[in-house]
Length: 219
Image (tube, rainbow, N blue to C red; front, side, top):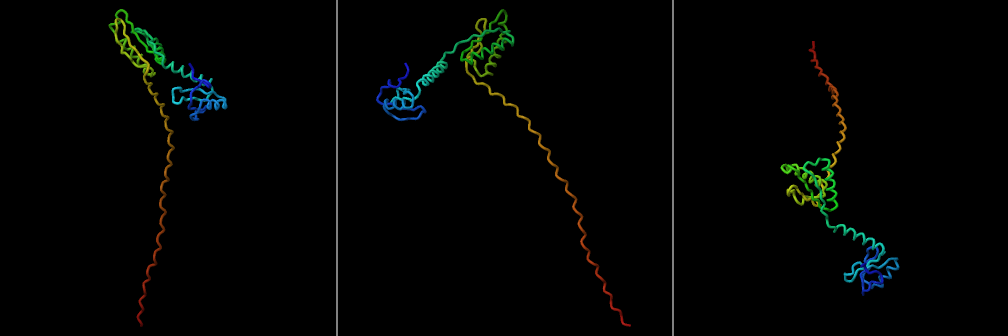
């Protein structure tokens, strides 16, 4: 059953929010409906259990579209995860194993658990290390994509080895791009060689003192 709209809102008073999300205050449904009609919208009860109930002025068609979109998103989140099954052999080659890893990553990304089973034939059970190696490659691929974790570690049951993966995990950060090499610095200009000091002019020599001639004796 959808929300009450327009004349179907029959309470004493309501709290009104307009089409832009602004609070218009508490008033009677008739007063609120008159405002909605003047603006070309409907009056929709969006919180009937509040005191007083909250009604919004907006287009009813738009309201139904937004409500349906929210309902679909909630249903998707609440969907119960399924258990997907992947089967391989201890001697599965790398090409086929990579294809299985891609499928496992897709299942986990969709929110489903994955049961990985390695089936042994003949004397293969005497060498479980090959099965462990393939399962470790699967775990590494899942963790690299950040979509899943190991819910149950590999365990031998009869003639098979089983591991269960669950959605979740954290994606590894991408490696930073290598830094570009710095441009070579321009060569520094060489400082000019110091010039030889100019030869200093000789200081002017003082004239040699003239010797006084003694007076001659009178004859």
